[in-house]
View 1 (tube, rainbow over the protein chains, first blue to last red):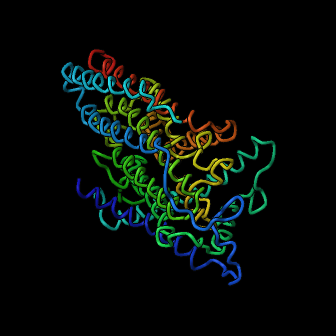
View 2: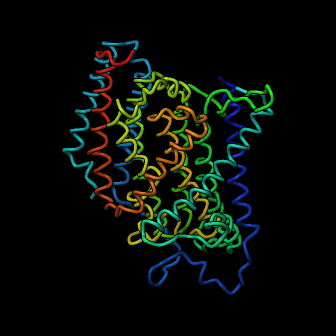
Length: 120
Length: 333
């Protein structure tokens, strides 16, 4: 099994080589611009540029989504091994799964009612 | 290694190049098809039927002036497309194209897949998610408010659909009892393709896959009326093309994944495995292109409620129903 990861690593090296060579070529093969073209190096702005953009405050929705993602993704990580052995666990596994999903469903209904799933 | 070191290196080299070649070919197919959908011809000047268009594009993109915006963090700005593209190509590594193959005229055999692992599916999801960093880094390092907004938006969209996506495939795992692609394909032999018992899961998977690869109608990250071009607003030339390349290769990977999980991948009568894999992947890619040509872009709050309020409960329901039938039913051995 470890050998399979070695072959995957070889593949990943090739993948990184392709991406790296394209990045290198974009720097090496591009035409050189004239020095006076400073204006076009400014970031895109519809109207007068205020200089570089400093990231500051962001809508709470992004943070909320990230937290919900972590909660549900960890749930799914727990479900994966259960799904693989469910056929052997039979009824015990199914009841276990139902209890797990029921606990989550309570939380899910709660965040829904609280409006966390509504993008504002 | 399933084969020797030399053979593995040759296979890795071949797979990366075939994937890039297939990507180039599919960009031509997409542009031709979109042309047809819109009552025009599409690119038909370079080479026979415009087939050499991708090569002409490559030449043009490489010669574009290399620009780094004044407000950008140069190192991260350059790193972002590299991360995206490496992860996109890397995620394709576990795709199976068949079992053991013999080189004609000799007794040499080799396997038609790079590697097999009991966590292959998890790995594809993990490397796909790692690629999100490319978008976030690119959006942040550009030093532009539209790029920043686009990057944030991309992450919010991608993580939301990651949940539905990973949940939708659990039904398949319950049936196949493995995360290895080879085992999943084997479990579907004898025409027991999971698209039928897992149709609900398949639908959720497809919707999530379109959103995961940022393709229309879920291309909110580059909604030009709102965030100009999203996280790649400040990118041009080859570095922009690398983002576009990564996005399309993600679509190819997800199509191939759909083919493996729901249509038994390389299994099929008469034709050899790799050809079946190509046909099935192509079928899903056609659906992607078809959707792009015929659907308008959804609104961002619609996108989020679809992911969280519809796909997530439906995928969970699908999981419970599948578990019930596998445990209590006799449909499966």
